[in-house]
Length: 200
Image 1 (cartoon, one colour):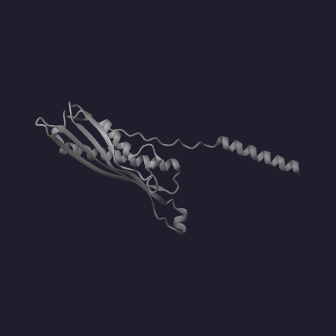
Image 2 (cartoon, helix red, strand yellow; image 1 turned 30 degrees about the vertical axis):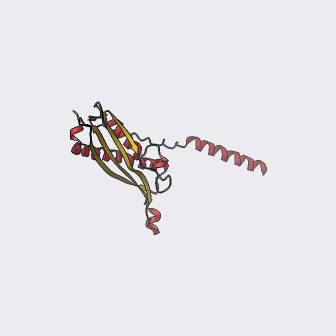
Image 3 (spheres, one colour; image 1 turned 135 degrees about the vertical axis):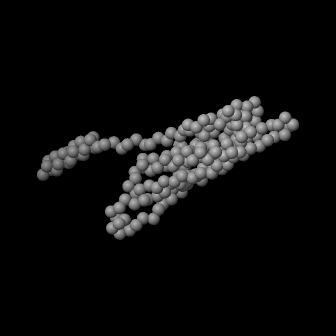
């Protein structure tokens, strides 16, 4: 009897190992690649820098602190990619005022509808608000200042069945939407108010 139990355990373990070896490995975690393809904004300034004034709380409902790519890094990448200093003096400063992503839990239905249906579980909402300030010295010793402000949001929902990688993908999709919307909004505002400092 003891031999039979040992044999049964050995067969069960072998089958478990065999099934484990055949199991499909989980898909790799998504990677966020933030880029901008628009024409560079050539400005009559000597330098450009980022001033990040957003202080993330580092706790729920905020989730940007859990990821390498954040709305703040989107703003930094936009400045590096889109703003090109071509002047002898002056400075362009992109000040980040708000750069959060929050996860909001959504109410779920009860009963049979809730039991059998794959319901929405939560919503990710990203916000990016920043201002671009250009300061140039004037021949009379004074300064000229130009300021463009852009504030954008992006959101996407997540299903209850989503695994960790799928949730990460939703977060990255939100940051990509933020990047696209911020580029559109800030570029339009720069073109509207900064004509005197733009160079072809």
